[in-house]
Length: 213
Image (cartoon, rainbow, N blue to C red):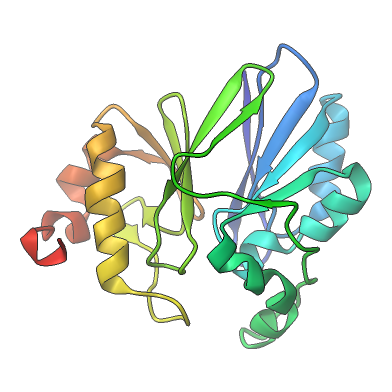
């Protein structure tokens, strides 16, 4: 299997390129910027991009959607609640003093328990709102791509429009932690981790309790 991480854009988003290695089809998770760099890597590996998967709709995670879509005709998949953010990426970026291209509209919506299949690989969708209303995570075997829900040692910010501290904690408690300590975490920013490590060291998880249920 091919699983590569490219750190893209000024906010250093982890963009993931995934393929089974048994064929040419691939998926990209969170192409936030540097579209030409992503395309060059796809072509070097002789892959064909099937899906562009967005864990959520913030500009730093979808900024290269348009260039990838135009170059490859891959399908854009995102949760319906975050789909409106695709067209307002430029305005959102300007509020951070940055630039981003608006994304084309999604080809289809994804939600809890959906399965995305590509040449033998299956990514299961988990709804993990809190950082944004339509945030999702993707589980591939024992690897969970958490977007900006769960980081190594921290969680995503919840002060942006659509964010909710209560919702993000429920997402972590009810949807992520039950997957088991053996699960590897690949977040939207920063280093990888595991659920086991986060249980031991993440201060937000240490304070989880019935108040979030």
